[in-house]
Image (cartoon, rainbow, N blue to C red; front, side):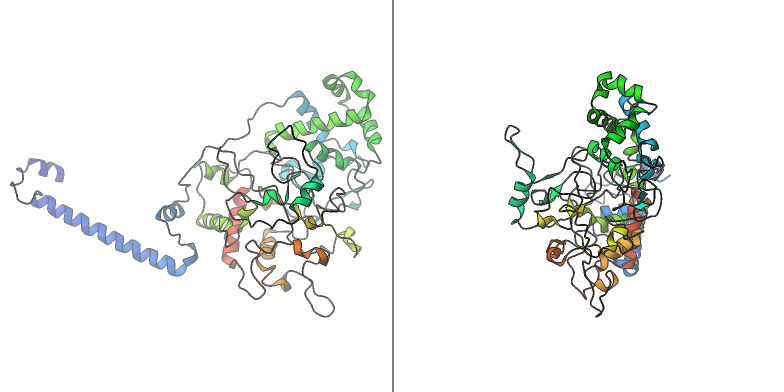
Length: 480
């Protein structure tokens, strides 16, 4: 109606007010409404700041994102292709689930790496049971086999620029890095640390260079599948229902070389882990949010901000949360090694010996880096994808839920009495799972470990809850 009335009115008087009176009234009302709306918004935001000052972001774009839960900058992710499994991968699948390859006849790869539990342990034990009679404790909690498709081999220092130049040995690289100051890690930024710390590899200590080696090792581990030697595994493979497929795929003469048979069989397992989509599905709520297909709750968005904040949780300093520049989805690990000083797990059988210390990269299960003591206490940073579904955390399984994990990060330096036991005199035994001469290796530079005893923890209880809420968005299986 207003538009029709204005259209019928005479043209404005030259040199006079160019706006007709009725239109002016409408504009005045509109201005009043806008002003009133802005005032109301200011009052609303002021109240929000009073009640939740820590959740009030500064940029207006972030504020809008907070209210809607939508990613303001969606991306196109380069996801692994979903194709039918090759014949070799199908063979690997059968081997992966074959419990007859163990000494007990009851343990397969899938026993400790359950497909129903993100290829991690299916229970809440700190370590898994194995051995000939399935009654021996393992040394460490099995890591998930998911999201390893981009894991590089173990190395120290930058990649070689000239491929014709012989690569230096690990010992030479480690020695050259021993006097270099440790780089501080900050959220969302690729740290300079690769030049100074180990990276890549498989197992908690990186002793397996390739997935194939990772698959072979449990077969003869006395507390896992417990075969006395590789010959025993070869004899089991000869009796397997898929032996003819091994001959067809790798040639009948393969059976003349026991080592080669085992190598090819584990190559097939590797192909299964690389080709099977469920090992890297990228179906979490966070993946959907990155692509603009899901809304995060206010708690989840706040948790993400704290996760990335280099002065707060700083989780993204090691658990990289942003897609790569070319669109590869984040794996939530920088695949590097850290000495965190987690407390000793007194319940592990191996820890009943007070002289035993699991020192990760420098031993005892890895033997080629024992001389590089600057790496003692360092363990591989695992992916946080699906970590909220796990029930054993860190290399010794000392914690069993995310609240305990966050408390460790929050209180390790500010309130160590909440984290570590006390000796007979009442003194807190800080870093009690690492010999005192290696305590200097423990990270005290990166937030939240940059606090001192008596300081306020980096995170409040509510902030910890929001971080956990965000980490739960990394579980696969979300349906928008």
